[in-house]
Amino acid sequence: MTGNNESTQLMEYYLGRLGRAAARFPPAEREEIVAEIRSHILERSQIGGVVEAGRVRETLEALGTPEEIASQYVTNALFERAAGSRSPWVLIRATLHWAALGAKGFGIFAIAIAGYVAAGAFFVCAILKAFFPENIGLWYLPSAGLFAMGYRGAAEPPMPELLGHWLPPVAMVLGLLTIIWTTHILRALIRRKRPAKPSWQAR
Amino acid sequence: MNDSSDKWEAQVRKGSLELAILAALWKGRLYGLEILRLLEGGSNLIVAEGTVYPLLSRLKAEGLIDSEWVESEGGHPRKYYRLTKAGRQRAAAMAGVWAEFAASLGALIQPLLSGKHGKAL
Image: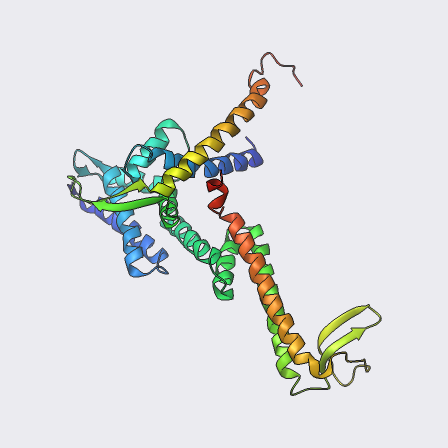
């Protein structure tokens, strides 16, 4: 099979962009993605064993941009990993990618961030109680009918602190529960996006 | 077609693409371009041809299909796909659901299609 310079250049430029857009994959996987698309371009662009530049251009147009293709590989890989993972880091990365795809994904990314930030805040309270015993506490705000955990400055009106020495363990447990709940909700949402196998196998 | 019916059509295509690929592989192994040609021949399921490759990779990650590189007489290797046992089971189950669904929906929409004889709104 032969091809002229122009057709080769067009193809290599496209494959180079694809390789860069798929940079987050390990080299072996990335090479396989590029090799498969290369095979597609050569196969689809040749007439009687000759690869022709006009056909290459047409083939590349029909493929879509290399960035679009790479983005779909990335989406699949992230969701595949996230659906089986309990790591906040993996889940946040999957929802961050989801956020880039649309408004719904952005809302779910916001849930992920809010959940993990709230959990972090509980842990911070638990630790800081040792250093600022008078200022960190679980406060009751009668005017609003609310409980709030956090920092209160000395200038603010005194308010009963409800937990005392119990605050660190309680805050730790609340933090853990918040992490577990956030992880659980995110995994359920990710599974719903990527239909689980048993729904088909059950029939 | 307005925006929302375009969006609906895109979703129907997207939802049926997985079944179409599994069905294309039912009779034996095929490489990417052969699958694409089968899909394009019977229907206009594909929007961008590039979408089929990430989807094949996902089906492989789910264990529904296998792949192998084979040298071709054309000089460049081709990546062939075939259904796994789990893939055959899933394809058959999906086809059953689809046929049932299409039959009941088909009966429902029948009056809409014979529009000439229906009442004008």
